[in-house]
Length: 225
Image (cartoon, rainbow, N blue to C red; front, side, top):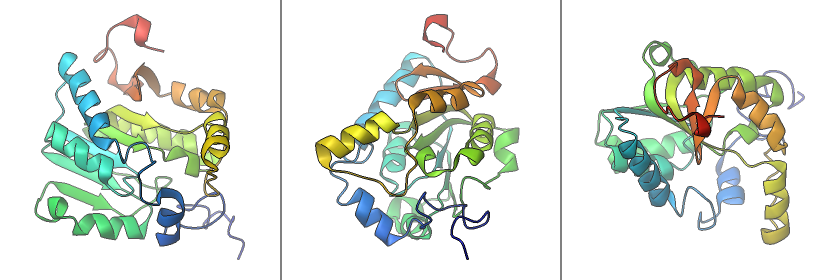
């Protein structure tokens, strides 16, 4: 069967492979050079300080593509949410997260092994979480699926801590670190910004505000684009 058929396309990389142990070793390695892993605590501290400054409380968090769970763990430590939703297409990542003591010993975690292309959770659309995380995930989704995924994320969370490497980023990583990600689509910044602008505004470094939030949230017009 063609690995790029409609059904096989979901929850796999550009190369048609799933996110199993081979992916984590090949792409993450030790994690010492991966942004959002070795410096996860700094990311969480930065955002917690920003939300405190803006007087925006965070009671619930959702992580869309939690991977190794390192960034999620630090966000939970920083914000102390009462409920956490986490979804990832990788069976390996799903099983590993369930084993973590900080997850296993708490009843606030709701973990799903699903791909973002088809993941739906009606309760989040009815009552969005205050903060979502989508860290370096969209580059693995095909073009045709991204608009729908972004619309769902904008409905599911008021704010989204978001990163995605562009074609320029990948060129830099190849030049400086000899790093190539065969699972990822390499796309220009303009393309991502066009997709994002329909449902989100950029209100800070790595931070998007859902347009479904209306007039609430960040007020300063200068920083909303």
